[in-house]
Image: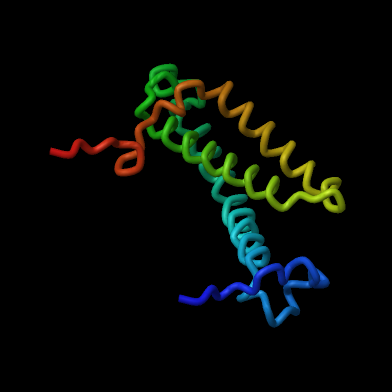
Length: 142
């Protein structure tokens, strides 16, 4: 079976992947495309899940519902947990794309994501304990 990638092609290119006819044969272009997919996918998702979590722990009068906030299996905890997972994946993707040349542009995105993560973990300390059906459940093999 032959490798579809051209070994070392990325070492001598002009890094203009959008115009390159060899991106399908370049490991770096494929990896960057995957990281960009993550970055493009999550911004609205993170916002929606964080907002759902904040609205979920308030009662009808807008007061904090302590029972909801302390219940690790509440919808609030589940929404915040998946938002935290998305934040961590986004941080990973931005970090993977960061170079010396673009770090000044990328670091603010990472800092914002880290601040969101820190605030969500502080406000919803039980969120990581949420067991996502099908994802976090451990099936026993008989």
